[in-house]
Amino acid sequence: MSMEGIYPVREGGDIFASDMVNVEAASEIVDIYEDATILITGSTGYLGKMFLEKLLRACPKVKKIYLLLRPKKGKEIAKRFEEIFEGPSMVPLKIANPKYLEKVAIINGDCSLPEVGIEDQDKQKIIEEVNFVIHCAATVRFDEKLKIAARINVRAVSDLLKIARQMKHLKGFLHVSTAYSNCHVKTIDESFYKPGISANHLLEIVEMLDEEILENVTPGLLGKWPNSYVFTKCVAEDLIKHESRNLPVAVLRPSIVIASVSEPVAGWIDNFYGATGVFLGAAIGLLRSLNGDKKNVAEMIPADYVINAGLAALWETACNKALNDNVESNEAEAENGNKNDEIPIYNVVSSPESPITWDLFTKLGETHAPKIPSDFQVWHYCFALRPNRIHHLIAVFLLHTVPAYLVDFLCYCVGKKPMMVKGYEKINKFMEVVGYFALREWKFYNKNVQKLWQKMSQEDRRLFQFSMNNFDWDNYFHYYSRGMRVYLLKDPLDTIPKGRIKYWKLFFGHYTLIAILLFLFYKFLSVLWSFLF
Image (cartoon, rainbow, N blue to C red):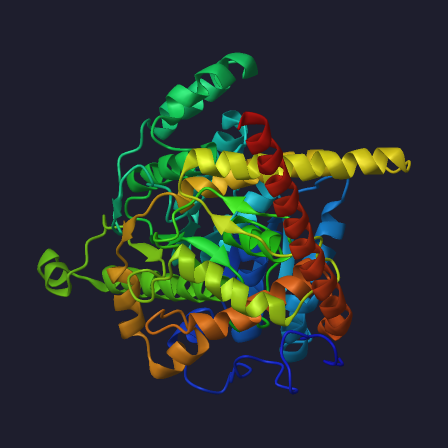
């Protein structure tokens, strides 16, 4: 397979940010997945696809990977399965392991249905064969209806744990949560926190009440949690605490997930969520204000570090299970420091070792984005973080709403479909969600993650990098900005000369408009002064 043009975020022919995996080198983590059967949920999502790709590429001796899939938006399961392996993120896998499809199979299922929609025959297959479960499936929409969020983010976890308890050869179960599941507290350690309601009680309520009544009582149920996503994630964690005793379960809590550092390709990103949407929206001139405090820490983590930490956490969980299985007495157990009822939690966050503030995030964007201007830019960069709510709303009205109505009016006059007003309604709604996290700051601890890193061999640290110690944010943003341009805007780097021309046109247009507005304002003040005095 030709690699030309596949990795356009890197220059000078250096297409990989890290070496290809050396399967001949000794790796305890790779070894734990040899001849293993793995079940992955959420494999069509960003993290799910990356877990799948890394396992197939770095652990080619894995026996089988089952993907829980359902039809969606008129697409059959087979089509969705094919789409998982499309695009540049899967090219390293196809080069390293051309026969990867022999290792992958589909399990028909749906996390929104009872028993995750798995038929008895497939359930029995999972019970008999699966060694590891990686549960990534979730609805990540912050404004999701509570009934849907509860079914997918809570009930599915309970159903999978019931199946896991029947698995004959289970070595590890990884539940992917979020670092903000407990955002109702300011200090977040690698421990469980009490939710506002138990899982069973929540599921009873959402199934008992009709949609209209449930929607009315949802704010009361959410309490201190800002949205249904983090609320149901917290409830799911509490469910795990109480329903996974004596199971080899680990909880992975990534913070805001951003583009990859190096794997599967440098700067890989396939969604506009969170900080990425802010960066890209500001870079192309669409986003001009965010209600946030630039002094606050912007808690975010590269996607490939999440994947590597997750696979390492599963390795540690499997090792601890093997150790516990070999314990012959309570005295030996105490000596080894292992307790079956302890469920490890891993806060995969950056702030304890390499914090980045929203101010630095903005400045790095201002540094790197103009070096690769896109022809899709709609206006010159004029973004600012505004901690004052009133100032932000004024800026949104003047810089988002007014221009949107003007552009739509011009489109209407020339017979084109107006879209800007509706577009900015969505953008402003998205910014309200992000603004909650940009206005606040949390203190995170990740001792379990740091201990896990220290426990790993040098080869495993090379293959499964996730330590944020002395992380180079400036170098990262070099590829982050290019990844967004190439993979989200679908604008290859060879169009930079064209983008640069547009950049300067918008630059002069922007400041010409400012000069005209200042002149008109000056004339208005002059007339007003003459009239009054």
